[in-house]
Every structure is written in C-alpha cells, then in structure tokens.
Image 1 (tube, protein in one colour):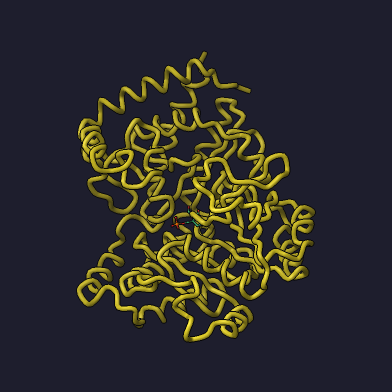
Image 2: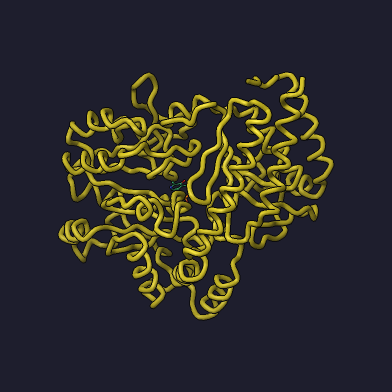
Length: 451
Ligand SMILES: Cc1ncc(COP(=O)(O)O)c(C=O)c1O
C-alpha cells in the first residue's frame, strides 16, 4: 500500500496555491478589502477554513453550479454544507419566496403554509407535532430543554465527535475515557462534563453504563454520524439503543439535519426508527433560514402539562422570527416540489457514481483509504477500514492531505466541503459533474503516489 510522501505533498500544495492565487485576482482583491470591515476578512469564521489562502467570492449560483467573481464555474459538491442540498435557488422555491415576500415576511402569526409543512413532516417522519426555529442548532437546543423539563434530569448524552450545531452541551469529547471540552471549544460556559455524558457510537455497553446513572434526559444523536466522516450504525445498534433508552427513561432525539440525505424521511423513515423527537434544519427551506423539531404524542402531552400560558414567551424556547411566513413558504415549496422521493432517487444514484469512481481510483493507486455513502451523501476517508466510531474516524483524519485534495479539486472546478471530504448531490447534479470530480481525484492521487 502507498504511504503519502509528505515532502512531495508540501510541494504539490505550494504549486496548487500558486495556481489558485493566479487564477483568482478579483477574489483576492475582495478578500484584501474585507480585512477592513469583516473580522478575519470573512462574514462568518468557518469561511476561513477553505483550502486556498482566501475563499472564492460567489457571483451567482444555480442548481449544482456556481460562478465566482473571477468568472470561473464550479461543480458544487459542498452545497452550503447541506443548506443547499436542494440545489441552489430551485425555481419552485424562488417563485414561492417572491410571492410571500411581497405579501408579508414576518408577523408572529401563523400562515396556512405552516399547516402544510406540519402535515408533510408528519407523513415523512411519523411524528404528530412540529415546531419551527431559524436554525438546526436552535431546534436541538429547544428539544434538549423539553427533554430536561419533562424528565427532570440534568444531563444529555452525545457521541464522541458528534456535531449538532453550536449547542454548548455538545461541544464535548472524550480524552482517555474522560469527558471534557472539545478541542477548540471557545469560552465554554461550564465544563461540559457537568452537562453531558459522552460515549462512542456503536458501543452498546458504554451506552448502557452511561444511562444507568438515571440522570440523562436525552440522547442527542445523528442516526448515522456525518460530521466526522460517515459512520453507519452496526446492524441492530439502533434497535438495542432505543430499548436501552426506554428502559432507563431517556428520550431519543434524532438529529436528521444531515441524515435527511438518506431519503425523504431521513434515517427515521428509512430504518424504521422510533425517536421521541426529530430535528431537521438546513435544507428544509432550500437554505432560507428555518428548521423544525417534532415530537411524539407522549412528549407533546408531557410538555403541554408543564407550560403555562402566561410564561410561554419566557421559557427559553422560541424566537421572534421563528416560524415566520417567509421560512414556511420556503419549506412548503421545498418539501412539496424539491425534496421529493423521485429527486432523492436521482441524487442517490449520483452518490453511487461518486463512490464507484473514488473507490476505483483508491484501488488503482493502492491507497489505504475508503469511501462511504449515506443516500446522496458520500465521503472518502484516510483509513483502510471504515471506522466504527468517532474516535476511530478522527484518528484517521489528515488535515494536510485533505487540504491538498480540496484545493486540487477546486483548481479543477469542483468544490468539496471544507470540513473532512464530504460530497453531496442535489437534484441537478449530473453524471458529467461527477465525472469531473473523479477525473480530478484520479489526477491528484496519481500525483501523490508517483515517486
Ligand atoms: C447534524 C447537525 N445538526 C445541527 C447542525 C446545526 O445547523 P445550523 O448551523 O444550521 O444551526 C449541524 C451543522 O452542521 C449538523 O451537522
């Protein structure tokens, strides 16, 4: 098997950086100007993580493609880290937004669209009641509050290397088996060990040991981990994990924000899971801010019994713009016309094509890497074996190598997410788009292994 030559990798990275800078004079100028008004030269700190020395500034985007200010066209396999899994600006959503925007954007009053969306979500996920927020982070935070309130327990449980948005309780990890703040955690309000138990995914014994304390209100989990590579549950894992949760009086919150890629009702529907609550954000409104959380009849009754009308605006759940008319119009059009079963089929077929292409190249070059898929999401990882949990996957991470492959792809017109090596398909992603990625990947891996 080929081990990557680090000296060579450095040289290749330098070459790609020079090419990127030479080909993006307008983006470079924009970035220089941005230093004067934007902290770090970007509107949001994650945008610094792109593989080049500065991000490409976007001129326009449609479907699976976008153009930068230097008039270069890209195949977008990042798709706003799932916010645009629907493709950029789908026509149906643009039309619904234009209509709604001209008829009132936010009122703190319901519109009929909310009912359509609630009824649609009920069919997709099988849970009867839904509420809306602006972000998946908020939907997770509110679900956690509800779980704490109705169980009267202080802690939550998450998996090692999970990501559920900027939820304080989830910025936590295991070091030598001890729970503590996750690396990079900025200004934690308390040591998250006080609020959170952490176990590895796919480890039922560890899960039971953690739940045995009877102090865990909820498990907040992606049904398959997607934020540290793609890690699928082992056969029977969720059946047993759900039984444990029930036995110890802990609620299960399925965060389907990314795993919606598995199908119209996410993994909950695909794998017939029975969570107490479901969270779904990002793509639900084609990128228009909006997210949702749903709950079972039992959770609904338990929480209703504890909320008093007079206090319902100060309980730590809600938001002035949450459930606004514009978000709900976007969600309705997205669910009705974009995130359809037919489109999911098309998207999954492209992800299969992506995996087949990458897998063949890995084999050809004899690299100790693997590629994984969940519906329309695919990801290659730098270990020969597919990891079973977050710890194993994180141990195989290779920031230097990842940056080279991302920049190399970007210079050949393909954008991957800046976090690990994830590729996402939208309804407009074409066979040709995926061939373009495979060709770039083939070229990069060949260069890496040639002495
Ligand atoms: C699984 C999961 N849940 C929640 C979130 C938070 O989404 P947002 O940043 O839109 O609040 C993310 C973001 O990456 C996520 O991956």
